[in-house]
Length: 217
Image (tube, rainbow, N blue to C red):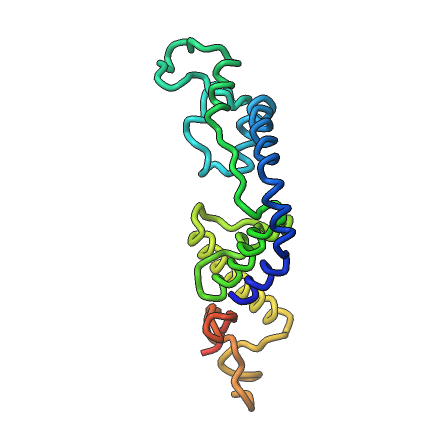
């Protein structure tokens, strides 16, 4: 973690002070923007940004073009709400809180988080490369199936093994590899036996610092 501490210290107390001083007005702007979100963003836009799994079931109602709730708490959903749409929107927005994590405006905390994900991956924690790529804002990286981080990690490992098997088959079809068990005319080839006699498998090296795919018996 020494590298992380050096990066944080490199920003200096002056930059950190500027960042903390900018947080109160940014909170005020966030409190204003939340009303615009309710006014202009439809439910589908929110679901696309945060994902279906993170969307509360209460968001679903008979008006998918708006985030304004159809009824307020305690009202009978089978009856018409006693509050108008503007009233419901205002009451809903008043309950939304906008928070800023300290030292995030200059990405101090984000940088620690990004490098921390890489360190955790090297330590053997099951974190998918998709999560690391998203933290570094890499566009169009692709997605792995799964609603949890472990499910994403397992999906990525399966993808890597399938890709390695396809590359092995392509190499054999163009003559870059030799089928195990012998050379031409059934004679055993001289020298070191060819690899590729086993299914590809992912193995860790250097204490989990790096990984490789093996396919030899």
